[in-house]
Image 1 (cartoon, rainbow, N blue to C red):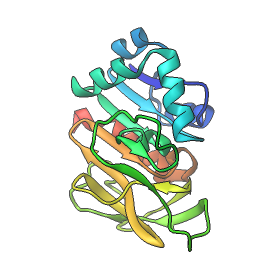
Image 2 (image 1 turned 90 degrees about the vertical axis):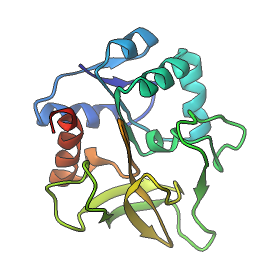
Image 3 (image 1 turned 60 degrees about the vertical axis):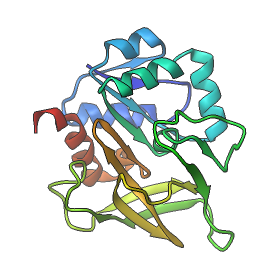
Image 4 (image 1 turned 30 degrees about the vertical axis):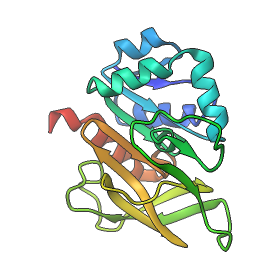
Length: 200
């Protein structure tokens, strides 16, 4: 069963609608037991890095979430859900991320108008499993002021003043900086690819 982690914020309804559109069963979870029963986990994210991490701690799900990711459960982080995979963020330097990957989330340069909001194109690595069966440079919808720098797990980039990680893929761990639930048919295909990954 796909579990959508409901920490009290995020684009829950849109993510639910996307899964329903592609015919995938799902459940909303708000506790560690729900995460332990999940075969796949989606962490939507809208808002502030520090607030999100505090919400996960208040629910008592941080350790279980990290445990399940390390155990090989397929994970998809959306927007702030991608950023949460790192150690910290310039948005809230005092807050601890999940630290699945080393490094910090950065703020766009002072010259950039933030948030970066609207449609932009991806430059996709041929090795990407999440962004397959799509045009070479698909357009998706973004809304963010902070970004994950390019790293060894980056499988697609976007450029807004600087190139940054738009899609991250590492084993069972996946993250997208954009909102697939607001990206039309392209977003539907990306979520469908995540749902079907274990069948590939």
